[in-house]
Image (tube, rainbow, N blue to C red):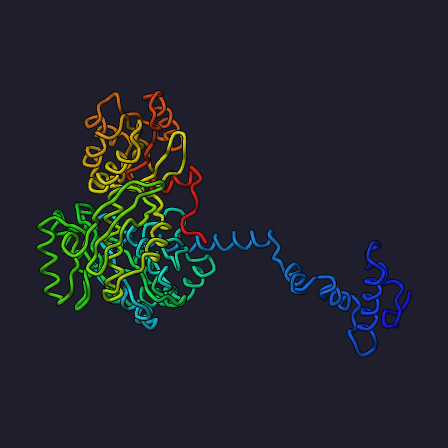
Length: 532
């Protein structure tokens, strides 16, 4: 065989396509011979690669060849992704073995101690802190969207999740990646363990699962890094783990009865807990509240020497009309009138939420108004999964996380407006919820009710729900199907049989619990939440 270091290498002609122009072939052969001469490239294949990546072969951009050669193996990518998601799930399950928030004595000390050990990452960015009974997550998403449209890097912390625990920690509108989630855990775990030891040595408990996730979120935001965090409380406010931040703007969504076992038995007691997120000298943006709650707001604002923007006095939703895929809303604030803004969500309550969101962002920017383009682009692209979310057609299947009477009333009003055809509800709930109150609100809006069984120790027994449902809806309108998939199919069959001649389409609404919403979304193949 000829030596590849010789000037002419007949064997190299096997690399030249037979149909290549002879003149081009000669150029390649000469280039190869030049590159492998003594003192040049020693490896024949390396020389050939150099020629093939030249403009003669690869065109004006030789990097094309390099890109093709370095394209990751999709099989390996899938294996790596699966392994990472497995790690995420293992971390989640380990953290979930900790006590839930409501079983740990109220205190901010553990979270403060852990964050202090880490150098107080929560002080590396500004924040907007959101509490209230209903509307927190949708409003948080709107606020985040407007801030991102303004060019800021955002972090959003909400709970619970629908698909994966990663969606609780969102950066720039996307759930934290599996790599970053695992890395965040590995960085905070030693400080969590130190905090556990410190607390237990003083007679206290180890950190709760929500406290751990809060520390992870604040750390991930600092590492990103972000410009502003939009943080939703887990429950209440004053003693909520998130309340170690000094929110530049505190947002109070409508307050009503929920979580009475932990927050108090009256709206006033619950509101007092939630108002605990307002810090001295900061700003409070409040949705419309009951008169007794407004009295508490005024007192808290005066006590904290804060500034108040109250719905109906300082800002308001002035008008709204239905539109394809959502609605057009007009909002008045102290600095501007935002007219006919497209909002890609259904329901009057989302119009109210949008007004609160725009006021909160204005307050964050110290009263500066926002451009129409920014608002339109932000709100027309904002979605809130699990909130009047259409996941299937024929019949229409809607998923909504309403789980208390106040939230159910908002959902019912929206359904009556947007879905006038025959309606059937699919319902289940946690045992500690006001089942009778929710069903009482639902009853006038649905022709029939299908009940299903949720898993878990917190879930109400289906027969218990059925007894209550029959007393509200009547025996003939209540149907029982423990399996969720069968329950959805049965509800769809009932909906389509109620009035086959109806011009408006029949619909099924799955509601009663965020857990139920999550299971139904997965079963019906809804897109993953906040995936990039």
